[in-house]
Image 1 (cartoon, chains in turn green, cyan):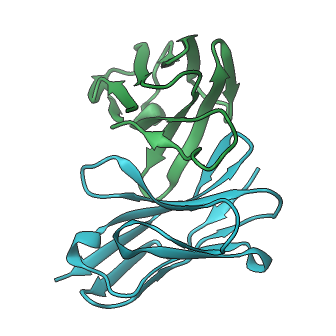
Image 2 (cartoon, helix red, strand yellow):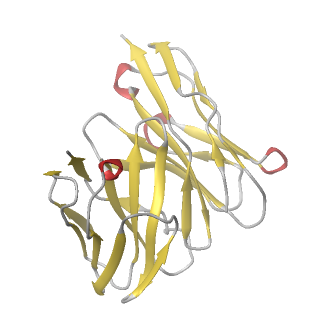
Image 3 (cartoon, chains in turn green, blue):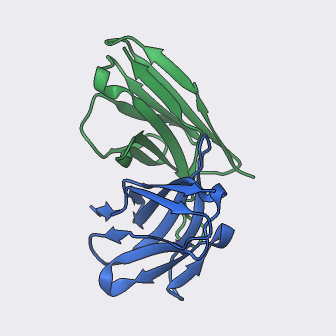
Length: 115
Length: 111
């Protein structure tokens, strides 16, 4: 069966420090991968998605970037964190083939606090 | 890009009351529709989904949703809620490879 891992679970970082959040998926090949930020009362904001290694689409201009160095690995990064980067970050995956089973599956999330 | 509206931000019900949560998306075309639930301290998980066919879809835990194409709506219903249904509910629309989520509805069921 497929599983999705995210780490760390929580992170407290000072303003101006770098960031690296990692997401890995097991039990599937060539998944679509997604990064979201979840803010209270605002739902899930899609930040990046990827349909393959090295292929990243950015949905909103921001202080963050994403990379996909391996098929089932998705990394969210920042060179210098801002206070406004605080939030709950979710990774998700879905099958690439069109069909009845291409809903998204979510990881446990990372709670980032920037001080 | 799609825009998804969930009109009820916070709903409080007593056990055994009926539930209907509204969801509207911004325009038609080929879309897939989903409701996700997030129980306190848990991952987002799928409640139900619509791809084609019967517009009334049934999901887990007694939930159902009706797709009304002419209204761009996909409302979630449950005839009788339980205290364990206390959670946040998200409507989502999938278009091509992207998923668009509503802002969520927090449901509080009083025992």
